[in-house]
Length: 183
Image 1: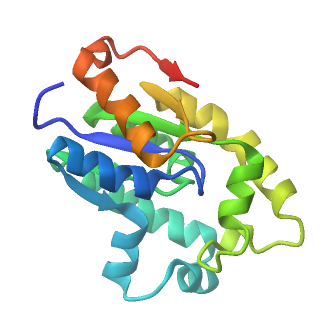
Image 2: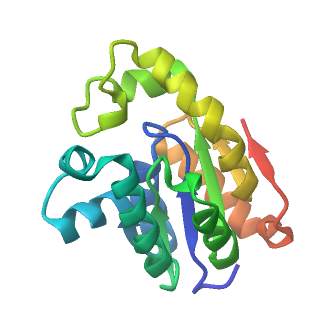
C-alpha cells in the first residue's frame, strides 16, 4: 500500500468505524474523515433532521454524492455510514479507490452501542435487536462484497483493532486484494 493510499471503513452502525478511524488515521499519518459528520457539517443539521425532512432516500442521495467526492481524495481514512454500501456505485467506488476494511461486531454489542443514541434514526424502534438483525441480514453481504479485510471488534479495544489493521497493511498482505478475516 503506497503512502497516498486510502483506507475506507465500512460496517454496521456501532461497529466502531469512527473511533477506529480516528486512531488508524493517527497511526498511519493520514487525514480522518467521518462521512456522517461531513454531511452534518455541510447541511448544518443532524442526520435525524435529514431523515425527517427528506426520508432515508434523500439522505442516501446526499451520502452517495458525498462519497463520490471523498473517495477522490488521497491519503485519507474514511469512516462511511452504516448504509453506504446499499449503493452499488458506492461499493464500486470504495473498492476502486482504496483498501476497504469491514468492521463487524455481535448483534448484542451493536444494539448496546446504538439503541439509545438519538442520532441513529433507523434504531428508533420498539425492537432494536430485531431492527439490527434485519439491517445486518440485508447489509452483511454488501459489506463483504467490497471488503479487503474484515475485523471483528466484539472482544477487542479500538487500539487492538487498529493494531490488527496496521499489521495487515504493514505486512503487505493487503496488496493481493483478497479478503482477510481477523476474528
